[in-house]
Structure formats: C-alpha cells, structure tokens
Amino acid sequence: MKWLKNKYGKELSLKQAWPKIVRRLYNYWLDWCLMWLYWIGEVPSHNFRRFFYTSAGMRIGRGSVIHTYARFYQPKGISVGEDTIIGDHVFLDGRSPLKIGSHVDIASSVMIYNSEHNSEAVDFSDPENVVEEPVSIGDYVFIGPRAIILPGVKIGRGAIVAAGAVVTKDVPDFAIVGGVPANVIGQRKVKDLHYRLGRARLFQ
Image (cartoon, rainbow, N blue to C red; front, side, top):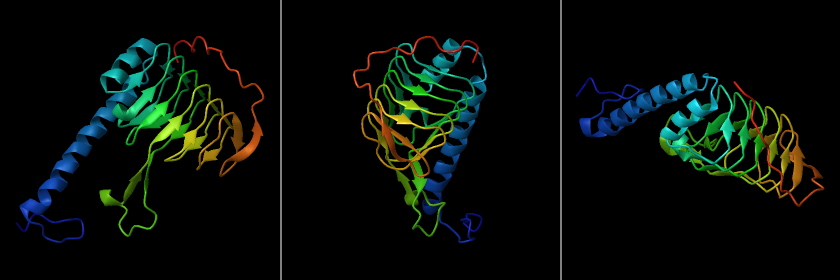
C-alpha cells in the first residue's frame, strides 16, 4: 500500500505498519488520559484527586497525599506508602516501577524519571532504544525542591537529597547528597526514626 509509509518515506506493508498504528493510537489514548489527570490535579481537594489517581492505577497508602499540579506518566506503575507527602508540581514516572516508601517528604517541583533514551542509539524515536529502570525511594527520605532523580536509582532509608540535586546513582541509607551530579556531602545523625509527617496543606 503506497499510502502506508514511515517517517522516512519508506513504503510499508500493512503487516509492517499495523504495530506502529496500534502503538500510535495507544499513545494518543494515554496522552488524553494524562491530560485529564493533570486537569484533575488542579482541583483543591486531596480526596477528589486521590480517587482519580487510584482509579488510574496508582497505589497510594493510608494518609498519603499528592499536592496540586502533579504530572504523571503511566500512573499504574507508581506506588506510594503510608503517611507520605508529595509536593506540588512534581513529575512521577511509572513507565518502570516507581516505589515511594512511607513517611517520605517530597518537596515541590521534584522530577523522578525511570525511562530515558539510549545515548548510543542512532534513532531516538525507536521504542527499542529506550532504557527503562525502576526507581525506589526508602522510608523517611526527604527530597528537596527541584531535585531530579534519574532511572535506576535507589535512595536508601532516611536519606536526604538537597534542593536542586541531580541523583544519578544509588544513595546509601541516611546519607545526605547534593550537587550535580549528586554526591554524599554528609550523614543524617539520627538513625532511629519514628516520626509521622502529619497533615498536608489544605486546598493545595
């Protein structure tokens, strides 16, 4: 079929084109759903947003909240423990499993990615050249504003990520990391952690 061509103008048979058509339609549907979740994220009610986030497949533990204007990719891959507070304007990526523990405090505008292009690939648009790795954030972690967590990272229990840090490798338990790329700059002195984060901000 001469009208079936790829982006380089090469003619494709229906058998070759069909998987691409299905993938394109699925991505249109996903983009539509994600747009609705973003709009829902503007509603100033934690319970309202939680209902739709969990309906989209996200797992959110008791007492945990996600503040307004959050953005997601593949919410069904995201799980959040109990008593965790996630700030406004965050980006949470669920294309590979993203596990956020309990009593975790994530500040505003934090971005967590678990999918990236293979930098050695010739064609960035080919789905085969995408690298997806899970991200895990332990209990009692604090992540400062505008920090970026990259694919494959495991942040240990009680660790602290400084504001603006770009985390490219695993963070040990109770370590304090900062910088671009993030490196260990200190240690959290209190190791026996039992606190609860308490009430999230209303109408946010």
